[in-house]
Image 1: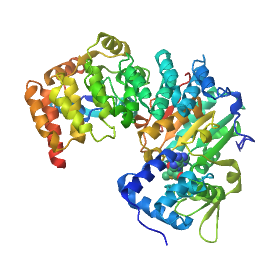
Image 2 (image 1 turned 30 degrees about the vertical axis):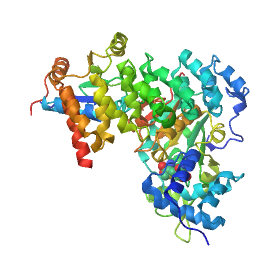
Image 3 (image 1 turned 90 degrees about the vertical axis):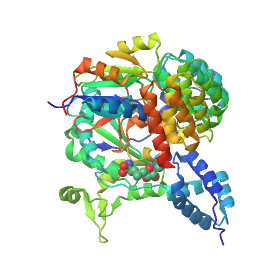
Image 4 (image 1 turned 45 degrees about the horizontal axis):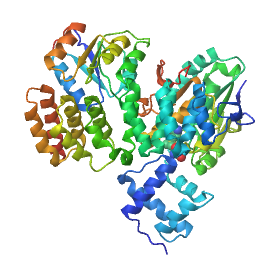
Length: 208
Length: 128
Length: 280
Ligand SMILES: C[S@@+](CC[C@H](N)C(=O)[O-])C[C@H]1O[C@@H](n2cnc3c(N)ncnc32)[C@H](O)[C@@H]1O
């Protein structure tokens, strides 16, 4: 036996991608019993912006993590507002892996996310507000600091505020200083807030 | 006596710093990981196992529950874990215990409480 | 005479375009490097200025100019036995693990992407030949791919500078290379014929689709040039290119903790590698 070359590339025609690759065909594949076929359908749908509602529907039913991951990647690549709405629903899932994957994907969709981020930051559920702050973390958008200052000035939940402070330590400028000081006053009993605000203040001053 | 070693797993740099400062002051040795995958890599790479994991739930790439589930299948000595989370919902707690956590604490955590729980599970930090 | 000014807006426009095509993102700090190469290509293509050149890039049906530019922009740095501990891991742990579950006589497939000038796939071939006793019982296929067509040509030629072979032992150099009059080394024809080189852009779904059923993938020192979004896409490609239970080895400074959650972390004595779950 030895190191060998095969005569031909491996025959794709014999595997799970053999079916028709137009949108109707793909939508059908998306609920195939075989997860590998579902993954391929989800991946190939990146070429069809109209596939969002089918993807979103499957996401609600899908139990296989690797298929969900492919659906999320495709929603990210499609990147329109419908795709973002489908992802927002995931933030309320009981499944931590799905929630966090949705957050990661949304970080890469600055335009579509910027349209809805304010609503998310005012959501009644503090967990969703924390996720909204997480999304801001690497969203390439000029208003990120403004949104964070609004959060630490108004939000009643200590964990939402401290998540925003952690992020201000990385992206904040002098404009955030007074809001940070004020927050320390607002939660004067909380050692973690005192600690994290001091970290943020020091970082910002060192950079400036 | 050598110091007890704790791995703090959290995507927030400030939280890691906070836990580090509290635990180091109490005599523990602290390492950090930014998510579940890095934590697994560190847990598998070290010669001497950690004595305790302190795990956040919501983290990119691999969340706290998935980390615990995978950790519990690895061929390394199994040690206690404390889950810390911003979420106080009951289904989260249930998931954490099922995944192999020993305690579930809700953030923010006061320094004394953190040290008390750690001490309860692995005893006092080494002497300086 | 070319108009040799590229504004910041031009640079940004170009950066977005190039990123979408290749997954490679240039920070502002790379501006000088990028501008210099674009200017060279404006000159070579006689397009006069950035606008003319950018139009050629975007609308040329053959895509030849885009390929020229990609060739000029890639970082091809590599050498034999780079990160050798992983080749050790391959022959001492990964392959023994794989052969335990495979039907004897079936083919073991290895994909080296990006291969650059070939040092990595040839190192794998040398390692298997020298250090893996299993090679007498198994057939192995090594496929090596890169986006850069010039570098693939070099890889197929198999001529290497003394620098590139500096970590090879005297013995191996003697056994598998021929010194050339100009000081370079020519790798033996057996290896040149054994490794298959192909052109693949990791971000082109049509390119990557036929790559399936691999047992091991080496993807080293590429993902460091990518941002989060491209890393995620790359992970999807590798996941689907692997057999269930197949392994992926990343470069020393690349950890899956920054890339994807699709794979399991596996510890072997020589290295930590990543594995596609046996069952989806
Ligand atoms: C630094 S070399 C790494 C070579 C070898 N794997 C090693 O570790 O020594 C990086 C290579 O990635 C290739 N490359 C860059 N973008 C690519 C893409 N989108 N698809 C395939 N290869 C790509 C470049 O052409 C270059 O040869």
